[in-house]
Length: 95
Image 1 (cartoon, rainbow, N blue to C red):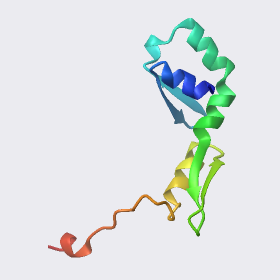
Image 2 (cartoon, rainbow, N blue to C red):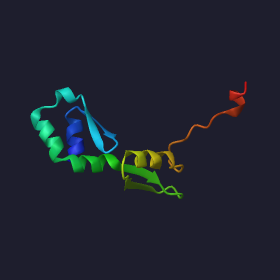
Image 3 (cartoon, helix red, strand yellow):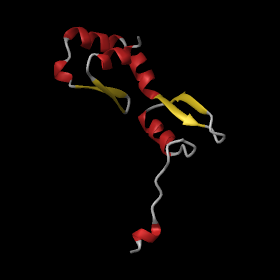
Image 4 (cartoon, rainbow, N blue to C red):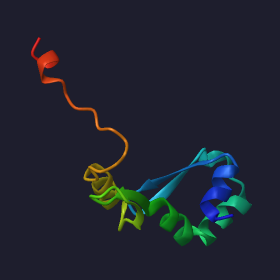
């Protein structure tokens, strides 16, 4: 089991925050868990930066973003995702 999965399975939420990650609820982390997080920081960051994108033909790929802003950019500019993007209904907006 990878480090990110292990800490999530322990009941914590782990999110990417620029060049670090945040674990919540942090006040419930034991000293052993804090040591585990420090020892596995690189592995956890790598896992959090993995991003699913789609090629123009619809092929799914997992790539590692450089950082969280890059990850957000990849997600925002990935127009071939099978998840539909809601378009603004201009007729309804003009009513």
